[in-house]
Length: 193
Image (cartoon, rainbow, N blue to C red):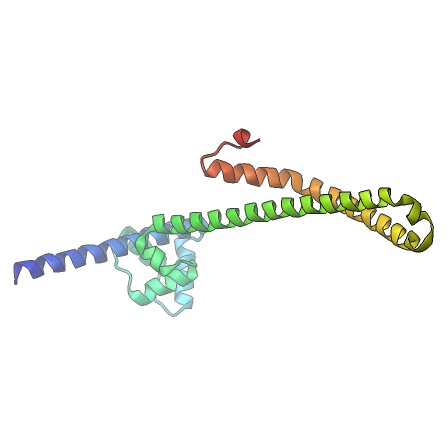
């Protein structure tokens, strides 16, 4: 055999073994995390038409028995594994979970910021309405603005109550999310206050 071809083939073999090892490690870690026993895993594989027993699952996980492609696909489906991430290894699965978590955390922080902006806008608008009412109180007590004045006063009371309720409900979660997010990005929440 040509020497360079032998080197290439040996590297392909190593890569294949690494993929199999990664899949086995990922499979085992996810199965254990889900609380699925090897026996339950074997039964689920049997339900899908594969001839598995607990001992075979044990041998696959220990590396004593290779896992065929159709078996690996069934395992990935049963354990809800991303097949590509599984052959890259458990670290890839953890990285994907971390990225998903951080994405959702950014969405939550963005929603909190939008909420705070909307709350501030509502507060400014209510202050302007209040000022208009105070500036034109004489006109609002009689004449054409009477009904409008009372409608605006009632609306303002409802909106003020709503703003207070929402503000109270969101105060602690918003502060906690902001602190968590800033802490994850290397900032100290107490420095930003």
